Image 1 (tube, rainbow, N blue to C red):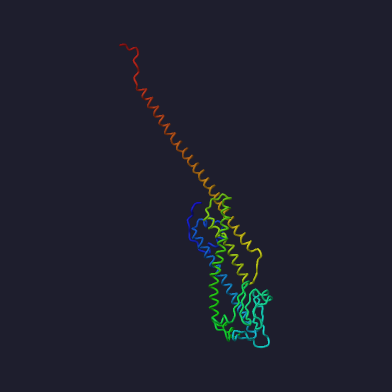
Image 2 (cartoon, one colour):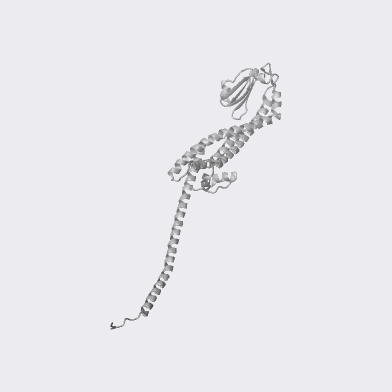
Length: 336
């Protein structure tokens, strides 16, 4: 394919063109690979910032809910000599916070999760008689108060002290750290995942270009694959943010994500083929027009030469006639 003049296009205009304007894909294919990669990295950075923001907002909301429930319903307790002590007759507190079945447990009689608790809650924050237990999905972490005391003195720690810390400005530092770390984690994890999708899509695009008889280099197909995934990535971002906020899920979203990208790469290649056919037709018309012009010019030149030849022929005949008239007649009957 022929080279096109490359112009700098703003990121959001480039994003809009990738979603709404298939005519731009031929230009995208001719870009430098670095330009397409920069576009992808910018898109993933925005993707990561937004997801991190939603995760941080959910974390803040969960902690506020936990604080309210903890302050109003949990009995007073303290940790002394690496043992949990609860004041009053009720020695056990258990609350389902409601965010993906998050359980908050304070129990001075038991030392670990029961099978029922483990199955009931996806995530758990628990204070038991001699240890603290945290569970996130399938990962469980258990630390005794004695082990924690080696790095942080928790003897004398009470319910009120925990609430005071949760209401302090130090929580802003925790939220900020969580936001930044999440951006880095999401950026790396999803960039690797989507790059694999791009490689797969580029192979499909290369096969499609061979079937459509469109001469495309792998670099050109790879560039187009990055842009062809734009709508899928945007929809994926919206879906994740909605899922984080509401827990809403779509059963076959991953399949739809792939199908949309396949439709874009196939349509882009067919559009390029259509453009090439139009260009060939235009070139054919130009060649025919040039041939016609040459023939007309040749005919005009022939017509211009013909009067000259006629004039020359008349001149030659006249000269011949004049010559014949000037020649003296031979004397008749001359004798030596």
